[in-house]
Length: 215
Image (cartoon, rainbow, N blue to C red; front, side):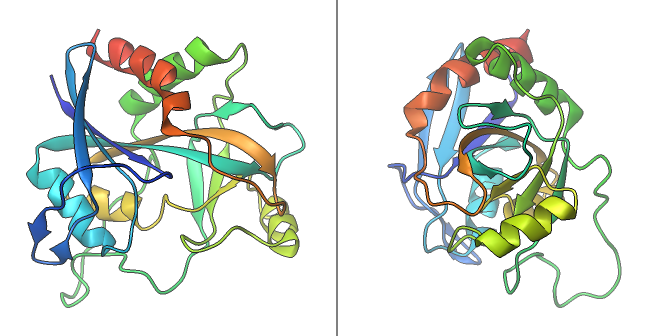
């Protein structure tokens, strides 16, 4: 079975791996429905190191599981969303492995892996009577939540949910040929404070998604 890596927004235990970009974030390993799954969360590492380590450990897919703020009035706390597009509002990060090389680009259409999205839609349906099949994820900053003014700005720009960790992991993963998809849960209104849900809250949805993916 294809090895899947999970990136989530709460600290995870695991082993750090040395890479040309320094040590990775701690990466753990578990099994669901016969699938060998890697689990990690952003830390003080260089994102290039973590994505490279996941690739070196055999990951072919990267799934983001994150708590987000609602920018759309259609979304309420407790809703699950499998986004089909994204806006990158971050600045000053390591977005590429090829910053010192000229030319070339990584295709971003479709923005998310269709097979991964279908599996995560099955996972969302296992935990919610109405998972949202489409929506625009806005990545704000890995170091903070969005302000009320930013929430209003990005909502007017077409965003539906605000998160922190999709970028630069998505673009880095795409450069290493990892297929990326996301499953997010709304925990607050955009521009309001809130806390991330524990990773255990995602396990029923991920178990169903892995079963659908492997089936």
